[in-house]
Each structure stands twice: as structure tokens, then as C-alpha cells.
Image 1 (cartoon, rainbow, N blue to C red):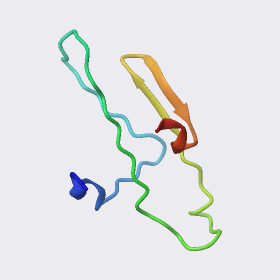
Image 2 (cartoon, rainbow, N blue to C red):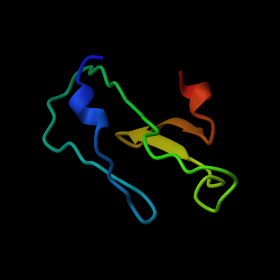
Image 3 (cartoon, one colour):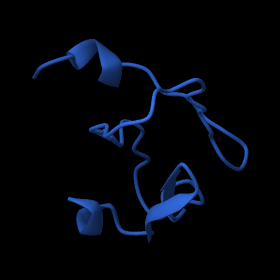
Length: 73
């Protein structure tokens, strides 16, 4: 797998995780988002029943909102 090191650790955020790219030159950009579920809990526990929400906007343009990662692929 290319860039396997990226998927060996995780970051958690209390509510949302935002990154800002400032001072970008005008033009078109290609953006690739990579998601990996690397923490699994056995059985129906509080941690395994959580939902995943992906709300992506780029320069105030709403790109995707879903709670189903398969819809993003």
C-alpha cells in the first residue's frame, strides 16, 4: 500500500477537524481525501455503534456530506 505510514496512527477530534490552506494562488486544484478506519471494537459497544460524518467544503463550496463512507467512493 502506498504511504502505509499514514494509516498506522490516528487522531481524534472532539467534534470536528478543520484544516485551512491559506494563501493559495487562484487556479484549479486536485484534492484527494483518504479515510481509514483503523480502530475497531469487538461486539456492539458504545464505541462500535458511533456514526461517522463526513462534511467537506473547499473555499465555502459544499463538496460532500454523508454518514456513509461508501457513498464517497
